[in-house]
Amino acid sequence: MGGDHQPKEHAWQVGRTEPVSKSQMKRLMKEKQWEDQKELRKQKRKEKKLKRKLERQTRSEEGCEESCRKRFKRDVTASSLRVALDCSFDGLMVMKDVKKLHKQIQRCYAENRKAAHPVQ
Image 1 (cartoon, rainbow, N blue to C red):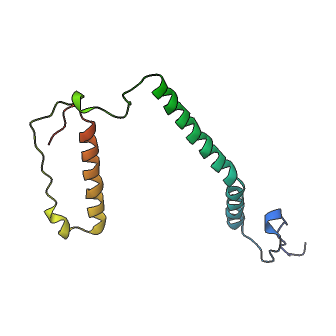
Image 2 (tube, rainbow, N blue to C red):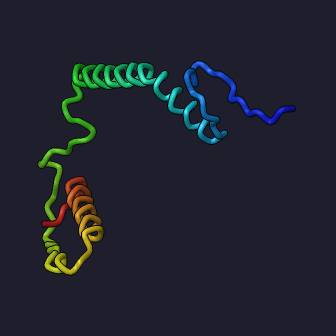
Image 3 (spheres, helix red, strand yellow):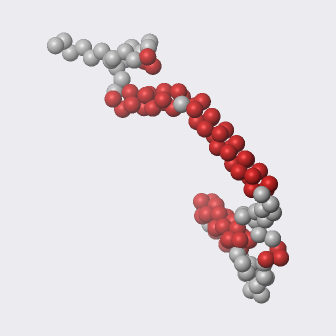
């Protein structure tokens, strides 16, 4: 029982001379696994993209003219309500809060587009 702590030699550790802690070893193994599976993830993304493309083509060939995501203007009944968003206080806000406000306004516009009775 000498006290020499020699790290176990793994294929990904060739050429390493200093001892590696357990957390460092786990991190290195995860990085290696991530790199090894890069091509597999790329292939899965391509297959998923192709599958979605084929599904869209079959839906369009079946005669489904109106997309599920899009709603035509003839279905919309305009509301007499009007909404005003006052952003004059953005100069007093921290940049982080301005970004949050921007996201909230984007969400409002998106939901208004989807609404059955959109406001002006």
